[in-house]
Amino acid sequence: MRSYAPAAGTALLAALCTVSFPLVAQSTTPSMFTVPAWAFPLVNPSGPVPPPDSVELVRIPNSTRAFTRKQVGNGFDSVDWFPEQHPRMPAPVQYGVRPDGRACALCHLPDGQGRPENGTLAGLPVEYIVRQMRAFRDETRVSAAPGSPTGSMHRVAKGFTNDDDIRLAAQYYSRLRLTRRNVIREVRDVPKTTIAGMLYAYNGDGTEPIAGRLIEVPETLERHELKDPWVPYITYVPVGSVARGRTLATRGPAGAATACATCHGPTLLGVGEVPAIAGRSPTNMLRQLINFRTRARHDSTAAPMYAVSDVLSLNDMVALAAYIGSLPPSAPSRRAARR
Ligand code: HEC
Ligand code: HEC
Image (cartoon, rainbow, N blue to C red):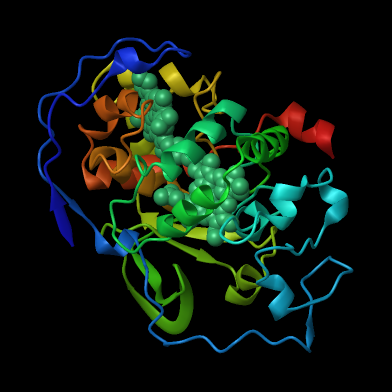
């Protein structure tokens, strides 16, 4: 657990040259905010992982392909379970750039659906992706929780030394549509979990009170580990979160200027260079709200979010993450057109 009291006046709304936002007054010094350790499951309590098997072939539902676990973990030639479901990957996405620029598809998957600990890239604006790569590279975007998977993104961003490779990857992912349907469950008691790598997994040992947390779990850990882009992720939140999140999102936590639609568009699917937030991993969105609040994200375009993040309590953030996670991840017509 760590506490932060970010410095006031760090907002530089004028730094936004390419996108214009309604000018929202920067709130006064944000009050102390304690980063909740439960929002960043980091350690694998089961200890060192054995080297991946390079003999036995593994499969996932609905794919005709088979790979070894060693192939699944290969950072320089990503496995692709459903090549027919997306355009051909450009080389940086599939093969990466040795020695440190591991392939984007290893973590964000070939179709950009991503995973809770790294996030979805499908459909994000090209310029936004390029800018975030730069922010990871110069570490103006870090994580509120030391030791989080953000460190791996720093290494990758530094490993991609050629800006053309980054642009190719950004253009590729930007063209894709997010199709993930999150399952949001409002509960008093949550199934007990264990930390598996960088996320929670069911441990089959009954339930415990949700106690204000947001717990996102893959339906099966095996499909998550094999990088199945279709494994459902179930997010447990306290009862009433979605409705509370909707109210906050529409009214704006600090009035109309901070209503999410003002900048993220009427369906929260993004506008111009402002990223979509609808239908994305609630864990990931919650972490970003915390990252803005603690100034872990302080790249040149982060400032408009401070007026939002600084007036949110942790409960508000959980409610907003649950609400935006419950929304359709792309416009129906575009989704239908892709099928
Ligand atoms: C080893 C795993 C890994 C690889 C490989 C990887 N990323 Fe990431 N990426 C992450 C993690 C983890 C995060 C989440 C960081 C955070 O939220 O703090 C992330 C976040 C991002 C984000 C921020 C998304 C957002 O919504 O703001 C972008 C953009 C991104 N990655 C682009 C890329 C691109 C492009 C590549 C290939 C050139 C790539 N990543 C390769 C792990 C990876
Ligand atoms: C004044 C404009 C503005 C408003 C209002 C606003 N946002 Fe944002 N938001 C942004 C911008 C700009 C970014 C991208 C920041 C960057 O480039 O670093 C962003 C990014 C985000 C992200 C991170 C997305 C990612 O891909 O990592 C989340 C989560 C988010 N906003 C949630 C919200 C929520 C929830 C609301 C409403 C309660 C909201 N925003 C209202 C401008 C705004």
